[in-house]
Length: 362
Image (tube, rainbow, N blue to C red; front, side, top):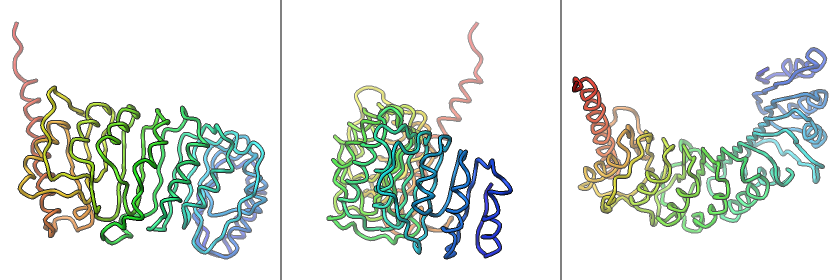
């Protein structure tokens, strides 16, 4: 049941739900910031003991302790409004035995870290989604939440991980503050999760990546399909280069979407052997620096590695209206790259169709 609560009448309906639906297994509440929502929600939730999926905006300590004991609960989503302070229990004994997916949205990432620490070590979580709205999350907060994820989850279980401290549409483009840039070593512990297929780390001021770390990442995560390592602001120093794309093309054959900021001013030498990933479709380059005169060479380099690449998106292009001409030199260069790789992919597809239509000998 999916329900939007905005009025006192809705609260009365929610309070009556346990009596009307005692065997309810799926509950999703789209909560407005009504002052009594958490109290009424908590009173209702403690009356259900066979929930499979629960999405709410906050619970009392008593209600949270109750859902932690439900043997069937496999999905939990908590979206805490800015106006609400949710207090967590200090200890839970063998909590959430069936939980496989958790999503947490709160003003601060540190809340999600505290919640994860309530889980038993060796948890079989398959999916973790954490969203914050701080925009300027301290490095130690990121370090803490990554340590918590690694210390909580079985290395063989986690498949999807998403941690965001900003939303692109909510942040104006600026230059990253160096003290808020996440050191690359901070994400290295995540490489123990060999079965990851989707990773999203949106760090407002960026991650200090280099080619060696990205090679290590590509080799450690062979099953990765979507990798998003983005920032909202211009990097003061982008140490990773276009050579990192060779690593992903070689070691991540299932990858179809990659979002990363790097230095595209120089074109590396082509690999001595043919390396390509035909599955790659979408490349997001954020505010990656590039020389306008090199745009055709960059497009050719990318097209060789990713022959079916259809879209190259930059941060400026992502923000402006459709059909609006690029304004900045960076936007113009990457828009040209996008047009060329699309053209190259179309020509390849046309040539493939033509070859298939040719009569075979014999």
